[in-house]
Length: 408
Image (cartoon, rainbow, N blue to C red):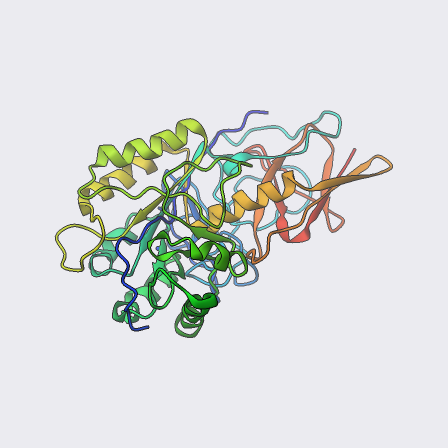
């Protein structure tokens, strides 16, 4: 069975200088109002305005980023559009058998004519990056003024972003962030005071409270201010992912630390070509690249290592043109990455001719997430219901169920 890949983008990195004296971020789709991640979008261009349901953390329907995609707002969890929609039915295709789960994952690229596997039952495997060649997440730190003033043009790109909100900053009260949430972007934790120190996580918890009170969002990811090491331990008991500041690619089932997740921070005045090269390496290596951006040149907000806005816009458009790169939020792609690893590290049990695959999800994992899997043949069931075969070449498995059974 041939499966083509697509890449998704969301979220990024380091915060620059320590500003601990403070007073207190494709395709985008919106999910329900309780806080789902903005979702994932494929790189070729779907409608960003699709909304997903509020019942669970699906990635959302037609991904705004375009090539076919998951609604960024519906990924669930810290998704700006809501705590977790079940996601739109963005899988596409009407394959054989069963009911199709509404995963909200973006449709994988390809002709959509892959026949249902007819061999012997077996070969159960999670597909890397939901069937895309690689993935990318654009994250933005600090709610800087140049993000606010350029928001409409950013949103017009039709891909979901992750905004790490420094909640104690005056700019966090700007109405643009509520709009970003409704547009399907992820709003996530960047602490209240942006300090390199946090006494037992109190400042981190204060920011989570702020996000819940102001936006009705439950964040599932955070970004450590200044990449401070103290947040690794804090994040382990509170979040699915903490973004760090070291630069590296993230591979399927690899040993990247989810509580110090690597990111790429573009240098000051980075060119389109420099940013293009970072995504090209992820695509060719079939890996996930996260970006950390603080702001854009020409402003007075003091953003760390600002980059030219037009160069970045042209870069994102070029990534979308690949058509096989998954652009999604930190929560959306991070949940797929961690969910795949949970299944890979799980167990299986035999009962007659049936094999049941079991897994344990990480703590603080957003609800309503799915992965895509392949088999050599047989019937996959969850809750006694046969799963639908999608002619792009996959089944979609609900992670919340924590098991799936393959029968002849």
